[in-house]
Image (tube, rainbow, N blue to C red; front, side):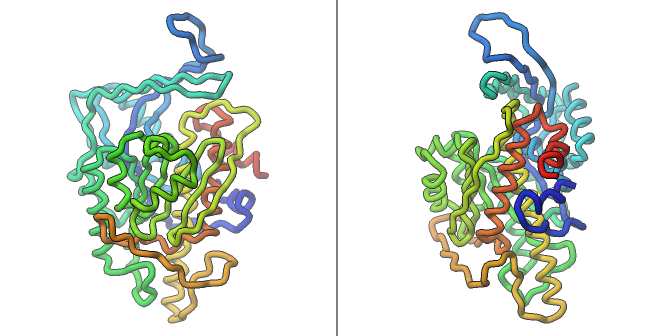
Amino acid sequence: MISSLYKKIVGTSPPPEPDVPKILCVGVNCLDIVTVCKEFPLEDSEQRCLEQRWQRGGNASNTCTVLSLLGSSCEFLGSLSSDQHVIFLEDDMRKHKIDFSHCPIIDGVGCPMSTVILSIATGSRTILHFNPNLPELLLKDFEKLNLEDYSWIHFEGRNVSEVICMMQYVESYNNSLNTCQSDDSVKLETNRIPITISVELEKPKPELVDLLPYADVAFIARDFAHSKGFDNMSETLRNIGEEAKSGATIICAWSEWGAMGRTPDSMIVQSPSFPPNQIIDTLGAGDTFNAATLYYLNMVKTSFIKKREEEESHKTKETFEESSETDKKREIKQNTNIESTECSRTEFINANVLQGAINFACHVAGAKIGLRGYDGLEKILRDLYK
């Protein structure tokens, strides 16, 4: 599907697509009531709006939408209310082929809702969120999953104590495989590959930093970076890296300034933004960037593992060539100042891979803000890169 655009956007051929395990996104699902105005309304004024619509929202939920539009098999996991609004949310997830079969349904509590005001004049989005105390997902809900079904699990930064337990649960599963991506002498069992853990830190809440030691890939949003006193992407990557798991990949998107990332061996890559001719709807642009990055990296991971297994089956000692760079041993220093003793399982990410991922993600996010909502995103990308 959209992966056919990979070569046109990035300049290299895409990794193979068949038999890619699911990406699981853990977080919140809510109803967005979107009002489109010529310009942001003055307080205590009355005016007509240009459009009003309902759409499914929430960071993890939006990320699933874009993953599905890109052609990835994905699942959403989060608490759902049993009120009448859940019918709309479930129907929309079915429409986008998003699995939500493991979501706990909570009785007696309303659905989280956001009132969103989009300004045509500036492209801004103002969000007023209401959550009627819908319970957060718990570890006991997460433990019902069959982890063999997933290649990648992405966590929305929230409910820190429970999310840490979920991350530790995945770490235990990975350790039970008794293998490491850097150990070429061990062959992975079919359908039992180490799960990559990623997390998004968006809200300006200091406790979210406690999630970093358990993530292989971390997305640091501009609002969170500002809350930590960081004024640009370089400063964010330099300081956040000190809090992260050894060998973690850190990614920071900064709106019109594009995105920057740090590889497992501390190399820095950067991509500019690719805005459309007219900015129409920036709601979910960050979720779109994250989803496109996850899609790209998961495809590379699958290709990496398949190649390694082929090499092992032929008893060769050749290493997987991820890029045109000459192979050299990457030095990853152990970070001893964090709680998790695990080293990131992201040997498949090097500078060329991360550069391609954030470049692709900036293109997809740029295309998204040129239309209302997400419907038609795949068509726009096809038209842009014919």
